Length: 155
Image (cartoon, rainbow, N blue to C red; front, side, top):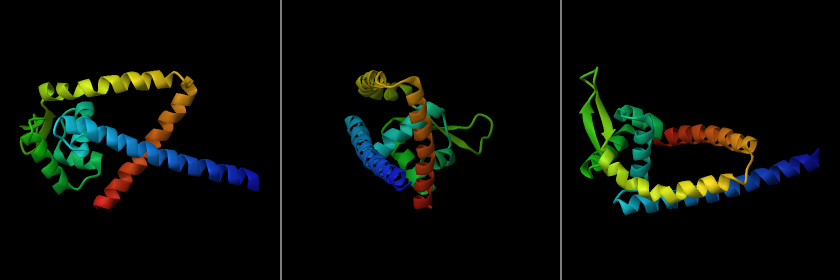
């Protein structure tokens, strides 16, 4: 039993080490992409949320990102000033405002992800479909845990 416990502890430590490395290179990659367009990594990832989710309210973005509402307001002010988003009236509730992407400006970012997307597809060839499903399940759980951790930090 102790040997099994030791193997699991060693594997969990390796997972933590690989996870930290993956996190670091992910932040650096997104920082590099963002810098190409005069953005920071938080701004670039917020644009990613808007691209995947469609127009959202500032409250929606605060919940998705785990950022404090005041931080989201400043973030949106910067993105609007740089021409990446615009605030529009909600179609059914005139008291609410939606944030939508400037599609032309977003298209300029897409080119930076094309090579990376090819690299991802190529790397996935090394794994079976079942292995990829396990990775998907793991990353989904970890994303939710990390979102909750960010929300706790921003209060």
